[in-house]
Length: 500
Image 1 (tube, helix red, strand yellow):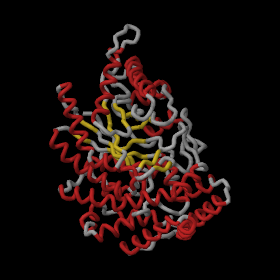
Image 2 (spheres, helix red, strand yellow):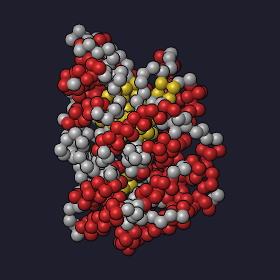
Image 3 (tube, helix red, strand yellow):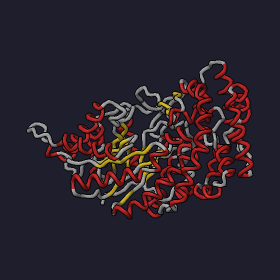
Image 4 (cartoon, one colour):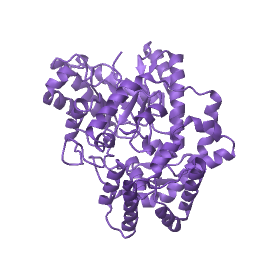
């Protein structure tokens, strides 16, 4: 059985400050080679996500790592001690030629590693984003098998890696909640086609995109449902499941930060691998980051997910629309100002031009939004933490329907997430927006309901929170006057230790 990493470094551009290993906060594609090495050697992170989805990629990554840092990887082998995991493009969404290029890097990297005396292929596992069907996962493996079956003396495909493992990434609330059905079907397809069961699967639940589309509470509940069902499925299939969750530092995107490890271990028991994104690694002291990684490595294998009774699944499905519908309504109202701010959002990576499509289900309508990090950062920089949006209204409706008392224990740290986010709330900006955009008046209802439900007062507590409050006012004023707000967003991000 392979070593399962507790932490996976990703290239998510959410750092406000600069990486400790360079002078600039912007990380180029070329510099991501060094970043991977630094994460392994200096931070003790044992997996690095090489992202092909929507960004520029250095296709010579393995060549450069093994040649430039040969002595290190001779002692800490890629594919055995440290892991380079491709996030491949989903051909349903991106052009197929990018998938073909990723495949060829996997193949040729295995040939290179063998020529240098390494025993294991450096890349043998890939993440499939936006996974929606078992057939998609199966087809990726089939395509790879057909590629390496090419018989030509110059290509020598038979001397390369012959199979790859797929990590299915679920990025919608509904898909996460029913991902066990997909995994069950996928395992059945493997058994019927090849006569064997996989030795393990690493189902991967996103935290950012589901929150962007459905709000905080539905997303956390969906992850809890998935973790519960994975534990049952593992026993049913006889296949080991090692769940992954993609967490940013701010609560809206997962809440995993070096100063928040106790919380994350308790709230997400059953997760075997967490993503540690750029803000986690670079917006906190290096020594604190290393200790946090060590703690996650030690503690994550110990905890088991809580198994929910079937009637709770039904109640969660019933309660999600109470939050989701009002959340989407508010975001649709806020979309113009979020998009206006995204034009000045600080860049941290070389990305392809990409605008996410905000798609309502059941034909409710469509608005365009930026990706999850600038989306979250824009709202925070305005003094409107997205954790608050719809949460108060959702709880109020759930209590009215007599369901909240059964659901609240499933998210024990909700109050902690709201208090932490609430420190960056700017009530003055909320009131100004409510006058400008009538639909934003509902945010005041959220604030009032949260404060009454949890007996707390949302707003700045420390000196840095008050500084953030003033910065948010400047952001709003400069935005109205059509002035550049990039530096203000950066400064606000430094104060909260994450851009978004």
